[in-house]
Image 1 (spheres, one colour):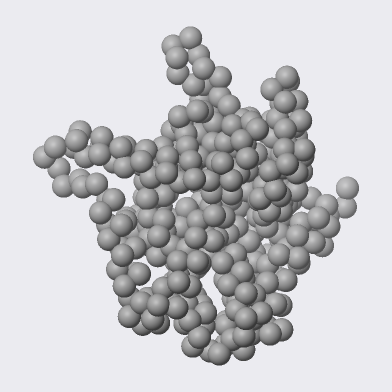
Image 2 (image 1 turned 30 degrees about the vertical axis):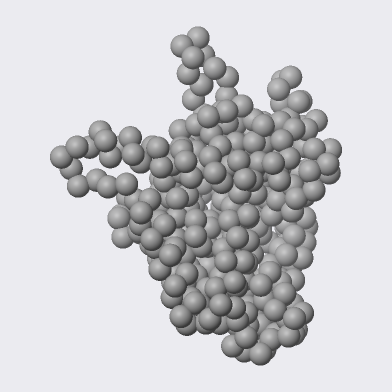
Length: 357
C-alpha cells in the first residue's frame, strides 16, 4: 500500500521535530484567539479537532516504529518547552476568559474549548511523560503541570496504582465492560485519589529514617496556591475560568484512561495474582496525526511494557495481531465515550470477540 502524504512527511522529518510541529502549531492561533477571538479562536479549535481527525482518517499508515534502542535526546527538550508553554498558556487563557481581552460569549466558548483541548491532550500527555523520567527536575516539572490543573495526585496514582494494577478490578482507572463513562469518571477520580494516597503512605511507612514524605500535602497545597494566585491576579471570574479549565483537562485524562483499558482484563493465576500486563490489555490507536499531537500516548500498550521509554520510541508492533486496536483515533473515541449507548454499540462486541479469542 502506498504511503499517505502524512506518513511520507514523517519519514523525512526527524521524529522529535514532527512532534514539535504537531504540538506547537495550534499555539499561535490559540494566542491570537485569546486576544482577538472570532476567526482566530474558531480556527484554532478547527485545527485541533476537525483537521486532526481528517488527517487521521485519510492517512493510510501510521508513522513507522523507531529502531529498537534508539535514543532521542531532543525529546526531553521538547517536553520542557511544552511544560513552559503550558504555564504561559494557562495564565493567558485565564486572563482572557476573565474579561482581560474583551472577548464576546461565542469567542470565549471557542477559546475555552481550544485551550482546554490543548491542556487535556498535550499538557496531560506531556506531564505523563515527565513524571516517568528519572531526572528529578523533569519529574517535578511534570508534577507541577498536573498541580496547575488541580490534578496533582495523578502523579502518584498513575505510577503507583495504575501501572501496577491496570486491567484489573483493583485499578480505579480501568473500566469494566458495560460501565458507562459518566459512572466511571467519579469512581476513577475518587478511587485514584484514595489509592494513590494509600500507596504513598505505605512507601513512607516503609522508609522510616529516610527523608521520604507523602507528597499529597504538596499536591493540595500547590493547587491552593494556584487558586489564590489566580484570584488575586484575575478576580473571581479568573478563579471560575481556572476551575472550568482544570475540570475540562481532568475530564479528558479520565476519558483517556477509560478508552484505553475499557473491558480488558488480565487473567488471575493459580497464585491469585494477575498475569503480567501485555499488549492484549490496552487499546492502541495507530492514527498518525493524533499520535503526534498527543506525544504517542495512543501507543499505550508499549508504554505499559516500558514505562521509561521516551515517547518517540514507543512501538505499535504488528497491527491487529498482538494488540487490540481502536476503530478510530483516541480523541475521536473519547468523544464517543461521552455518549455511553453509542460507545457500547461500537465497543462491546469488540471486547467480547477478544474475550472469546
